[in-house]
Length: 254
Image (cartoon, rainbow, N blue to C red; front, side, top):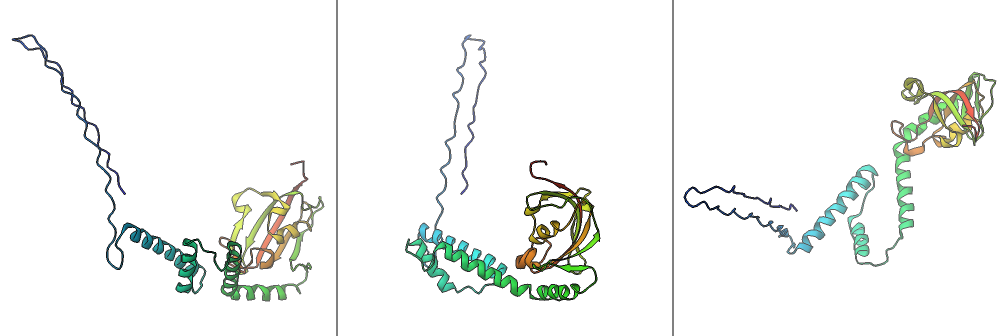
């Protein structure tokens, strides 16, 4: 709704000397234009909409429907039953107890999103698992109980970080097909972060290294970003990292 504010216009007349009488003409008083009243929106008529309340109610319903379509149908891939969705909306607007509380609704939606992402990432998951199954038999590749695979490129002789320490390293991360998604080498600045502040595959792998070493990590999706993915990393992707541990900063000595 647009408001129109009228500008106050001031007209000032300079006093002029009158030759015949010597008197002065009084200045004209300022004139202020009254502000225009904001227009009242007219209700949309037709289709059962007769009042402003009808129009607002319909507009709110359109907003809710657009959210359901864009977030749940298009992004989530869910098949939404409009009758059930409308019943839930009606219950909440009328202040009635729903069939599910907010916590249960969140649990259901999260599980549904995970299942949908796993379905979409099926081919990527299968390719990663097949690669890891073959890769674990290659000379020099070791596998931990969690499923992390690693290869020692250069052995270091420095200290080994713990979960409470901060590490400093250079790294390069690629997908299974060799596509690079991140690299500190390209930025010219090493990564400095807490050992427990990174993905699980890194947290475990870093604690196998010593300063001065360079490892190659083969990280299954369960130890990386899982079925949801992250940025350029698709859901279900296993990741390959070359990690060069430059330094370890003990807690309290950073």
